[in-house]
Length: 409
Image: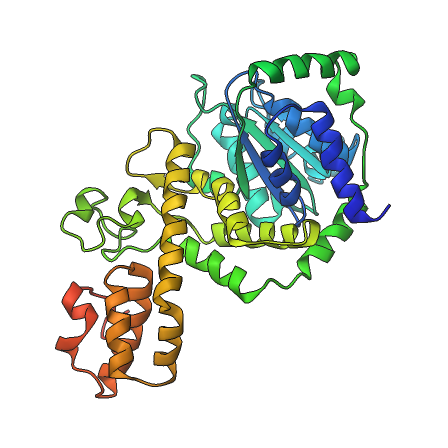
């Protein structure tokens, strides 16, 4: 059996033991196909967060997994390492015994929202830099699979900083079971003697997973896929009034803005560039495993990559809100294609043409990301004497780009 077949078999074994959420499971499997993958599962009590987490880890790592539970009082030594006291007493040498959690290939964080801030900071550093520190000693952490779960409505939660959650590639939101699915779950529990985790086989070795990860890394995505990923992420970042640096935030910042009806007006805190990286990893994995990655696939992936990385101006139900915004994105992308915006921009990149510029300006008035690119070209044309500053789109919109010229450092 080749590696791709084993990955497909892994997903099949999980679905044999876990009812519902099939698409979320598929995305979770795809997310394992790049180094140091991280997955967050969010749901209420009793929906199967821990079960799904352990099924996947056991299917990849077998017994080489360690669970750190936020429900217990976690000490530094359990997560990072502790001093070897005999070495210190007899030889005066500070030797660190690194924790099993650091050394294991499979890392599980159960109820991560209950972990104390100190423990979270250590795990954050591990995910960010692939290393840990204890007692002045550093240990490099090799490749791994890290999966965490949480119930954000839990009253005993710590409030972890947004950058911590940003380090998770994807966030799965599990739904509760329908009536028919409840009967299906009961049959499955009886079939496996009410012990789903112990019945889960190790489908592939971690060495095989690393081989799959190397193959996925070599996948070359179609330029249109790369373009759609970058454009989609930028749509969730762009702001003519620079919301990231402004002390005023939407909706107050958006009052009177030309683009107030665009999706930028619904986003309070924008995405980081890690969203682009995560989408690219998923796209490569889908191309390798499923044989395709189309724009519709990217939109579905975005539903797992975006919600835990941004803050909306108004949130009723984060998943439904994101579905609505992504639907607007689908319409926006179709409109861009109908206007032939990017071919127009390519023409202007070659040479300034006033009639083509006029068409591009019309499109830019309704598209902030396209306007950004056109205004960048306008600066060049003004410097070359091809366009008057008063005639530019940036002047019309009152768009002031930050400049560091003449600023003493």
